[in-house]
Every structure is written in C-alpha cells, then in structure tokens.
Length: 184
Ligand code: HEC
Image 1 (spheres, rainbow, N blue to C red):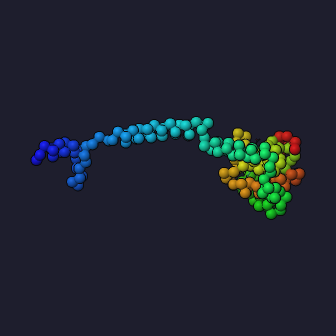
Image 2: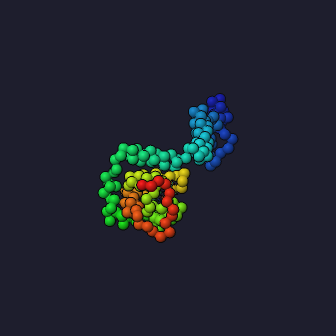
Image 3: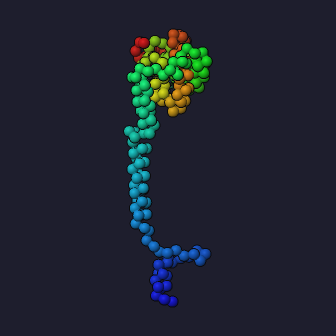
C-alpha cells in the first residue's frame, strides 16, 4: 500500500452499503450558498405572499383587471362586440343561463337583488351603461362582496350576461330590493 492509497482511505466515510463507499468531501461552497439562499427566499416569500394581505396574488389580479376595464371605460369606447349583443335575443337567453348559474344566489333569480343590488331598477352603484356593467362584472367590487368574474367566466360570458342584465331594466320583479346607488 502506498501513502496515496492510505490518504484515500481516510477520505472515505466509515460505512459501506453493498460494497459501495462514499468519499468524505466537503459540500461545495456554491452549493451550500444556493441551498441557504433559496431557503431564506422561501421563508420570506411565504410570509410576503401568503401572510400579508397586501401581497395577495388574487387581489393583485383583480386590481389589474380593474385598471384595464377602467381604462376601457374612460376611453369612452364601448366595445362593439358588447354593443352587438345588447337587445339581441340569442345573447340575452345565453346570458340568462350564465346569470342563473353564477349570479342568482346574490342578485336573485330575476335580478331583484338579495345580497347584491337589484339589477332591474334605475339605480346603480357602478353605472348602468353596458360597458360599465361589463367592467363591474369582470373586475367585481371585491371590498363590497362582488367577486371578480373575469377569471371565472371569461369575457365572452361576461358580455352575454351584460346583455341579459341590460334587458332586465324596468322588469319590476317581485320582492325587488330597495334601490342602491345613483339614479341613471
Ligand atoms: C357573492 C355574491 C355575489 C355574486 C355571486 C354576484 N354578485 Fe354581483 N354584486 C354583489 C354585491 C354585494 C354587489 C354590490 C357591490 C357594491 O355595492 O359595490 C354586486 C354588484 C353587482 C353589479 C353592480 C350593480 C350596481 O348597482 O352598480 C353588477 C352589474 C353585478 N353585481 C353583476 C353580477 C353578475 C353578472 C354576477 C354573476 C356572474 C354577479 N354579480 C354575482 C354580490 C354578488
């Protein structure tokens, strides 16, 4: 046995499994560095994203939608696709299906209002023009309990249900909830 071999042996860890042994090397510094920094990042990230209200991804998304649709509103350009659906029987019928499936629990089977406002009267908190209704549906009014529907039903169904809501105006359903918001 040479000296070199002896040195190798002291570098081996003192166990074996099926004749396989492991060298007793130090972990590379860069590797330890990556491990420690990703661990620290994970803890900071967890508290930042899951612990703090302000950094909620959902809220950020809702806000980005709000900005997008508010911009659309202020440009005064009512989306033509939406306009084409207003008063269109087929769109209104399809929009009613969307409404029954998603909105009726809070707005009533006929839009008369329950937790959410009456959608059939001449008053609205967020405006009663089709593009305003569409923007409210897409982005919601999170603080007041109206969920953002954009991520759930998408733009197309939001347009259809806008057409349905626009068709409800003046329908005077039973058990109508008292007006909320400003007169049209
Ligand atoms: C969890 C209950 C809930 C559901 C479900 C819900 N909404 Fe709402 N909605 C509300 C509340 C509460 C408000 C009032 C928000 C406010 O006062 O700012 C509201 C407001 C609105 C408004 C604005 C009314 C106004 O006066 O300006 C529209 C339009 C609307 N909702 C449409 C819908 C549509 C369409 C759906 C289904 C896709 C839906 N909502 C589902 C609770 C709900």
